[in-house]
Length: 117
Picture 1 (cartoon, helix red, strand yellow):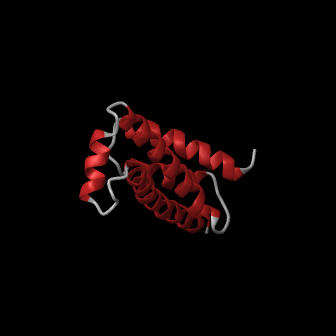
Picture 2: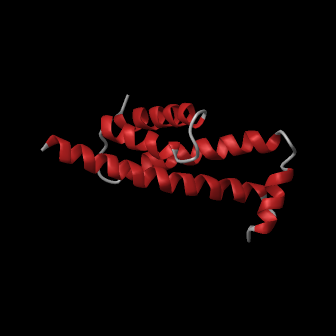
Picture 3: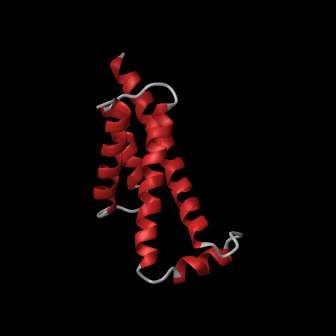
């Protein structure tokens, strides 16, 4: 299994487990830890955790919202300039989480490079 796929899967698992006991920033801890222990190269350091958390948060918000027929998601999408579309809100949520995770993963990679020296 390639390191990209392994990092993707481990990031999702660790982020989900941490989200059970920590606030939203637990995805940053998960991305930081996986980037520290599963080294990636070049742009994959940012984009693999970014996509992992984007998928996790999109699916998680979809599951939570489908339980109440998207009532809350529709209302929040009206408050934000999203045209009342709950799916765009879920995508924006995933992107925000992905950006946080990607930045934390880059920091984890930089720390691993410093520790190697």
